[in-house]
Amino acid sequence: QQQVKQSPQSLIVQKGGISIINCAYENTAFDYFPWYQQFPGKGPALLIAIRPDVSEKKEGRFTISFNKSAKQFSLHIMDSQPGDSATYFCAASMVGYGGATNKLIFGTGTLLAVQP
Amino acid sequence: DTAVSQTPKYLVTQMGNDKSIKCEQNLGHDTMYWYKQDSKKFLKIMFSYNNKELIINETVPNRFSPKSPDKAHLNLHINSLELGDSAVYFCASSQEKRGIYEQYFGPGTRLTVT
Image (tube, rainbow over all chains, first blue to last red; front, side, top):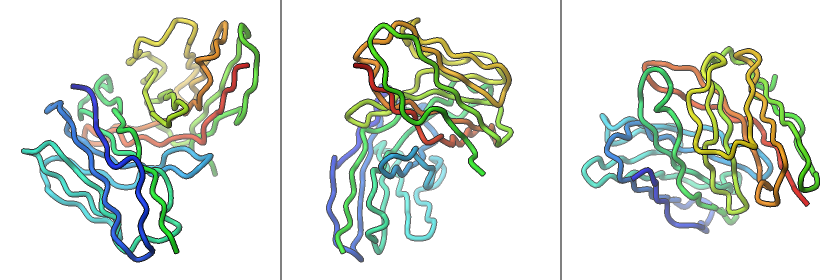
C-alpha cells in the first residue's frame, strides 16, 4: 500500500512534442503528490506538486493531472525541449503536522530523452 | 549559495571501514532527511530529524547512525561498511507550511564500497 507505481520506465520524445509520465498509488491517505526532476550527478529538484482538492495544476510547460477516484496522477511536459532530458520521479506523502508522516514515497523514475 | 550541501561528493572505501557523510542546510528548515538511491535509481527514505529529534527511522540497519548536532546539520555515520551499502546518499531538508513539507535535496554523495 505504500508503493507508487510509475510508467513508462523510459520515454523518447521529439523536440516540441508532449511528454507524459503516469503514476498510480494505493494508499488513500496520501494527499500530497510532488514531481521531482533529476539530472545526472545532481540531486532531485522539486518541479511541481498537487493536492487532491484540484484535478489539474499548471506551471509553465509542466502540468499535473490528478484523478482521485482512479488514484492516478500524471505529469505532462508541453513543447518538450532537449534541456528537459532528465529522470523524473513522482512521489506521494501524507500531509500532517509533526513531521512523522511527511516521508516521500517515490515512484521508480522515468528517463526522458528529448531528441532535437 | 548552496541551500543543502553534502560532503564529500564521492567516497570510495573498503568493506569493514567506518565512514561519515556530512550535510548542512542554510534554509533555516526544521526538518532534515537522509535518502538512499540505489543503482536502479530507486529513492528510499532512511531517516528524518525534526529539530534534532529523530522522527522517522525506516528500519535501516543499526550500522547507520544519523547525528544532528543542530537543526542545520544532519550527518550520517556508517559502521562496518558492506558492498550493498554502495549507493548515492541524498540529504534533504524541509519546512512545514500548512502541513506540507516541500523537500529540497542536496547534490548527493556517491559511496562505493570495494
